[in-house]
Image 1 (tube, rainbow, N blue to C red):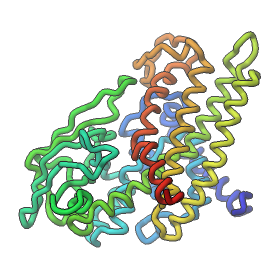
Image 2: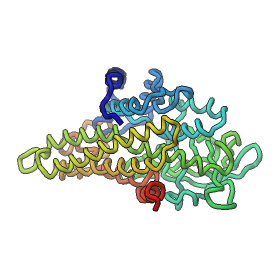
Image 3: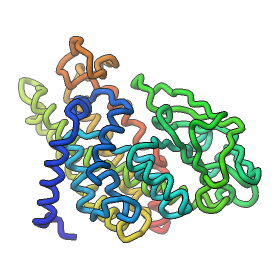
Length: 398
C-alpha cells in the first residue's frame, strides 16, 4: 500500500476541509471541541447538511444513495470532520443496520428505510444485548411468535444507546428453540412508537443519560419487517457486528483527541515546566501516537476490503481492540496532565449556556466524565476478551 496521498487525494482533502469549515455550524463545533453536551438536534442538523451536499453516507455504494468513495477518501473525510469539531455521524443507521438491509433486506425495505436513514428522518437504535446475554449473545431470550401476518414480541433489551431519541430499533429475537441457540434467532425492524414498548433510562457513572433498557410487552411487528429469512438472524448479526467494530476504531476522532492532549500538555506544568517537556510523559504520548498510526493503516486496509464487497473479517476485531485501547489511553493521559484539576465533576458545566466559574482551566470540566465514559469502549461491540478469542481462532488457528 502506497502511504503517500496522490495529488487527487490532496485536492479532495482541500475540498472536504473547505466544505466542513464553511458549513459546520459554529455552535455545534464549539460544543464538540470543548466537550460540551450534545443533543439530538446537533446530530440531526449536521447529518442533514451532509445529505444536502450528497455526503450523507460516505460508506454506502452509489446505487443506495451513497458517495461511492474510496477507502482513502472516506478516511480523509472522517479525519477532516473530526479535526473541525463535527459530531460523529451516528453509526446505528448508517453503519450498522443499513449495510444489513442493503445485503439481506427486501426491495421494499431498501426503498423505504435507506432514504430515511441518510436524510436523518429516522433515528435508529440497537436491540442486541439483554441481561445475561451480552458477550454470549446467542443466549438471548426476547421472543417473537409468528402469528401469520405479524410477530408478537416479548422481552427486554439493555445497554441501548440513545434509544430515548429513536424512531426505530433493529432487534435480535428468538423465533425458535430448536437446534443450536444461534439457529433460532431472527432479525426484526421495529417501530419504537408501537404500543407495548417502554424505554427506561440507565444513568451512567458520569451522570449522563446515554443508555437505556427497552421492554417489549406483546408488541406487534408486521412480518414484512423481518430482514432476510426467519431463524437466519445470527448470520446478519455477525455481518453487522463486523461493521460496528470497524467504526469503533474511531481513527479520526482519536487523532483529534491526541491533538487536544498535546495542547493540554503544552499548557499544564509540572516542576515549573510544561508537561510536554517531561521526557516520560512525552514518551507515553509518542507511544500512543505510534499505535494510532498503525491503527490508521490497518483501518484503511479493512475499508478497502469492504469496498471490494468483502464483509469485515477478523481484522475488525483488531481494529476494535486497538481503537478502544487507544481511546482509553488518551483519556488517561489527559487526566494525568491536569492532575487534581481533573477530579472535580461539574455536570452543569457541560451545558453550552453555562456561565459558572470553572475549576482550573476551562477544558478541565469534561475530562473526568470522558475518562469514566471511555471505560466502556473495551466492552461494547463485543468485549476485547471476546475479540482476542476471535483473533486466536480465525487468524492464528488456535
